[in-house]
Image (cartoon, rainbow over all chains, first blue to last red; front, side):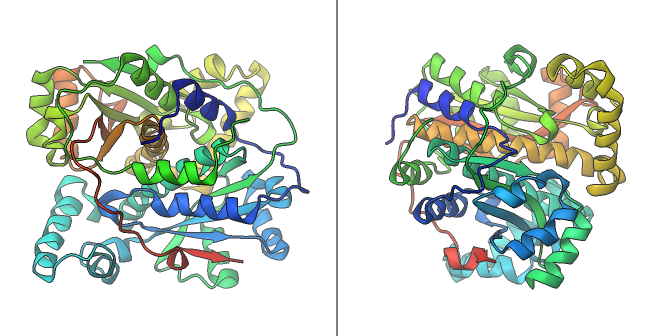
Length: 222
Length: 222
């Protein structure tokens, strides 16, 4: 087991900040960035569905096309060492009866053939009854997006633990970005759509002090 | 800055697993658990809205009431050292024109009075145009839930870094749990509803090997 101290953990949390201006000259070593992708890959997700894809956008021409649609990354699109678009799977591939879920059960989770039908029924109950995800395509997609926020958090936090800064980006025009994904990134947007983005690189300025609600406003013991 | 190595980071990611059976006799030291709450508190969220509340459920009677509604925590409700329900704010308190957002701008973010109206207009554009969150109360609530998954991920991952196991729980009946929140936890469910839960404690058995899609299936470079 690993044994970080409380103080080390809090240092990481405090070092992680929304780094909006990055040093355009400093590049994250390739091996370190691969570790961050591995952090995304190893992140947990509901039922182990891993409903995500990571596009690493390094081509300046593509970054330039993103820029007018992505007000939340006006500086980082120009200066981030690595810029990641995190896509989430759409309702079509998240349904309990989709080909993708069959693929995950058989080829990734290696479920015995005899368990597949029962597991699918179990997923169906969850999606229909417990969380009512079949209510709309948006509800199902947002459920997939929630899982991608786990990868986002892990990648940002463990980046900070390695001395790398990040800036999460929700400031973009969803529909327009999905159009661009189709036209310029060759993404099948019936299967994947944009969930969130994240820039990784190195700070130029020290972080501003954090503002947060006090613990007593957000925690209750029972 | 902190400087974990790639190998330390990957060890943490591999130690973190969905620990479904915990040692009912082992308690997380109070100071360490406070650190985990602090990790939740310091987590980032869209626009710094912090749309969350953490209920730490230690009372065996309340855990027993949760149990029939929470199939995903059948063992951990009995054995977790600490059991956390993460609530998210509802549409009513997440709207750009809500009292809560006014409170955050004024009392937490300390925005100058002259900037408040402009910032509210900015939030409105995001909620209406960019993400279409006003489409339904569910869309807005799910957006708040996404932010709580950032706290979930950070708490689980940094728990692992301190040698503490966890198990995330989406396996519950949403509506029934919200009813219980109202009747037995005194929660105003017009303002907060259940997003996700997480058990924290200590493993009894070694983790099973992880199953994940290969990196080349989930990463594309541009």
